[in-house]
Length: 320
Image (tube, rainbow, N blue to C red; front, side, top):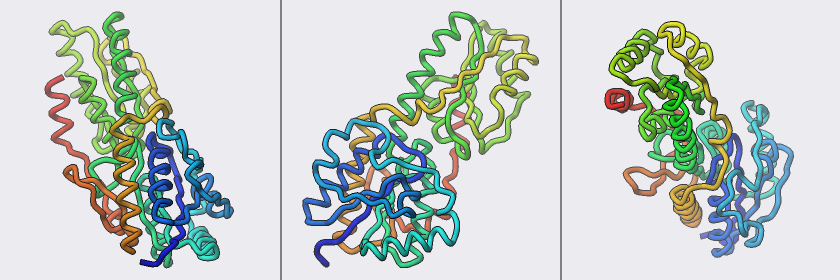
């Protein structure tokens, strides 16, 4: 094992609760083996601006319970270009970084794959509230986002019941409906609308009218943001049923807040596994959890799309 490896950590793209817990664990565990750890500020934008800071044990003190990321983040368009990737690789080589640890979602890890193809050793750690990373059952932050959203939906249901209204609740999920499905399952929502499935408007209306005829005066519809215009959808429902429909958008509250114990523990396990991979000179893989077991997956498999379980959707709507 080559001693005193130099590692850079980056948290690009959308933040997820538990990222700080992961940065903390990577730093502390890495330092215990004599590794040199750097944090890259503001995601890939900071990488391209050569904005590095050396991480010490006290750099990550008192952050395990905080949401977001102390390293900050940024949606960097330049990293999507060939010129951006080349610049990132040049800076990492100039700084003599042995490993780049990318903590982020599908887009961030995919950029890490492109960097790896240019000769940089990369380890990915999936952190995303969308849970849309292929090859892993769960991502850091998903459990927290789920709990936050379900708590909000439960409160909205109280109002829906009191005023006998239908509520369309828009949740995050621009391309995937994994979060929306689990929110619907956990909150007992009667209908869930996701990007992967074309809206069957007539079926939704029939279910609402049938439930209303049976005496059910309020309903919850979970609507993933990428499925269309939730406000237009609500107006069409109101027009077709004659019932009162309201829209509530949960927005960025799903991203923030203190990470749950589950998100913190997953962050710890993935961080430790990542450092152990580096100590074994493994490279160009990302850490995953499959069937409750932490393992590594090759970065190239990120080209695959994580498929939604449509049977799960049918079960949710059939019992609620």
